[in-house]
Length: 599
Ligand code: ZN
Ligand code: ZN
Image 1 (cartoon, rainbow, N blue to C red):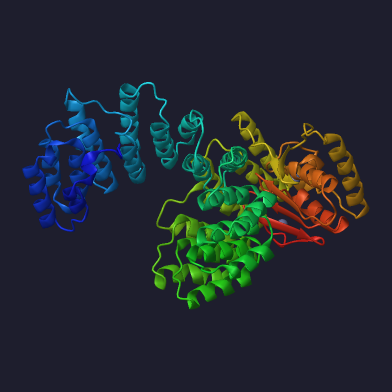
Image 2: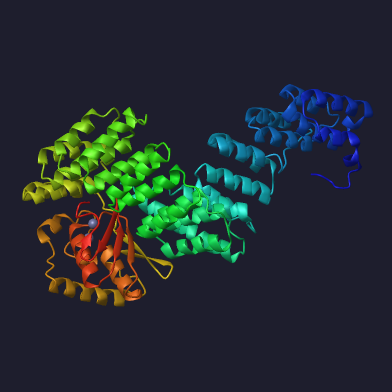
């Protein structure tokens, strides 16, 4: 673009142009450029276009361009890029239209990047797709890193990770910005940590695994990660419970004196709380030079999901004292804290305070939390009442939560109401049928239980396969229920036999009656000891030394039998076992669990 040898660069008028501070000054310089004839040359015109676009009315700038003796594509590109940057995207687009209408002009590889960037910022997906078609038409062959990188970034920001990946794979030597684009594409596509839908959780897991894979490649390509890269990496580690790699990133930040800003701080707090290292998270939280609402939210949520309800509420008070106003995420964490430890009155009170004191409109998630809180405490009718009177249409999560509460507290009538609504909303998922069947079997209505099962079979409903991830020596290992594909499967199954023998010695009896129907999510009936988390625990016991806590991530809810076995295993083997299931954390230690057997 800019040629250093261009003699016109040294013109005093051009230096004067750079110093212009107002439209009036600009007009004076413009006049001189006209009298000296400088305005007839491309480079001076490009300079005045740039300065004019920030000082003059748009019409003035456009007039300069239209009066240029040879309005080249270079001049158009210069102005398009400036307009797009200044958020005058529509003006930039009509200038682009002028190029298309002019037989002497043809868009080139400098025409598009600024437009894609602007579309990405506005999430104008359709516009971007249309422009992509133009790229294919006008730029051939498309071996231009500049354009490809801008397409990559556009699709990444619009959440289209598949297309972003397509462009990434064509870029020969990706630079830092390109790496960050593709990494954050995957990170964005795994936004939800706790989801009621196990399939969604699986998708999140695969996206996060891809962030780890790509990061490995990035390191081999010797491109140094930036803060942005590390936030993405740590967030993926948090999602997967990949603690060692997350700690590596933390150490990298310290060693390379990168700034421990609140983005990185929040990501690390989430990593440590998600991996069951509440102590680390707490320590880091108090070390952060600057804590904003995101750090507080992450820490309060971390305490809440670990069943430290009181501590979470104390921290919330601290936050208030520091003058930070809570947002809806904070309030969700606060209510979740109340819910996990059964603080019913506090939970109700915070829910009311949201509107009356903090001026926040409760979202469906807050209602979900309230219903969960009431349901856990056995206030099944009140929970139902809340759902029926809420201002928005209840979703499947709410009904499922009510159904769960009705099952635990043996409230058949409410259970059936919940089920009816649930099946209407999600006729294709199996979980609700299984829950109802469990409920009938719990009150020994075997025929009804069977009927529901039959119905489910007739509808051809499939259960999501159970899967557990465990990190050993920095690598993630995945086990499915009854899985024998792991290279060390022999050792795992030997260990499993030993575990079962020890469990029996300690008086554990498989809880057949409930269990028969609380296969809930995992298929293999009569094969409880092959549930995925048991395999993962067995592997961790074989492959790690005796003082390492075992950290597992499971895509489904932990079943009753696995829960009581894992409690006992934590005692027998003297190991901390931390299981993150579909909805919460179980921190097993010395024969008991942080959820206090309520999950
Ligand atoms: Zn199980
Ligand atoms: Zn538990």
